[in-house]
Length: 425
Image 1 (cartoon, rainbow, N blue to C red):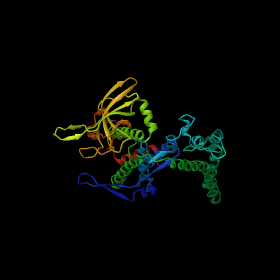
Image 2 (cartoon, rainbow, N blue to C red):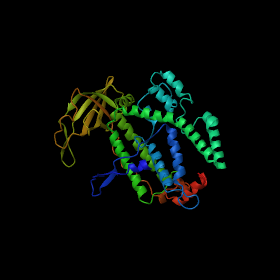
Image 3 (spheres, rainbow, N blue to C red):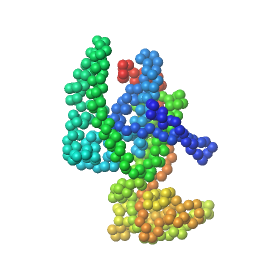
Image 4 (cartoon, rainbow, N blue to C red):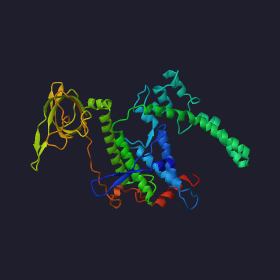
């Protein structure tokens, strides 16, 4: 919580078009765990903590349910493509390096690092052998090795329980030291691997659109922080109701579409993959009408240049598809007018619709010229937020159990969680 609170210090005013002015925090948490199992562990911990009560029988400090709500928030954001608030290290490494093992094997941080960056003096094969040896490289959690549990951890815990039951302070201190040493041996190799992996990632150039995605993280973090500070914050329900599930699905789908467009815009290798599927294209401008104008319904003349791009890519886009281009100045927008086959190639007529400035004559460099190579991919564009029904207007076929509703009483939620997990948790 100290780390999360450290991100809630400085706010930046964001001017808006209306009278209302918004602000957001200039930072947001960025938490790394070794693998997807670490995210699942935080999800379970958040669920156990966020429903705990601060009064009545078995009370806990107020920070416990607060931590549970924040952990649940971070776990839910981890489902969203493009976020950086909670990330598995194996997933981050897999986005930038390829190995000779399966995707399932890439979830093992030690073996993944053995492929990417074997220790000095070791071959990949030798590093892989060490990574698969639980004595040299314990699992990266959240579960420990069964051999370690049975051989070392269970006897140490029995000694600890015995010392605590007898009240022998010297034996208890020794048992605590033994447990701390055993667990440190399990944790330290992964701790070192995480920092080595982080150093590798810091050597990767930042994607041009990463900053904009982090601003969206700051927006999300600010919104939830303000909700927490409002005094009306309730723990997230154990299961989503109909409206909350629909909203989350809509948000995840939009985030995925935006992230895929960002990756294609930033990375020519991702763009090449889309081109092979016909979802983007690149080619050479073979004809251009840079001075073409259109007359709008209000009798206003606007520049609408057209260019024809010859490409060998298997284009599967349709007329009127809105386009963006990573090889043109920022803000460049276009639209497909027609696609005509020309032997093994395609001639795609494109109309430039944005990024030319406000003058009647486009700024130099904002309109493609003949013999210029250009890339185009679909513009995910802006979509309005879907309007969902109110909680009391959900059809009975989708209402589900009252316990799943967004209007669930937080006290009842806490009681339900206490009954499920048990007060001794």
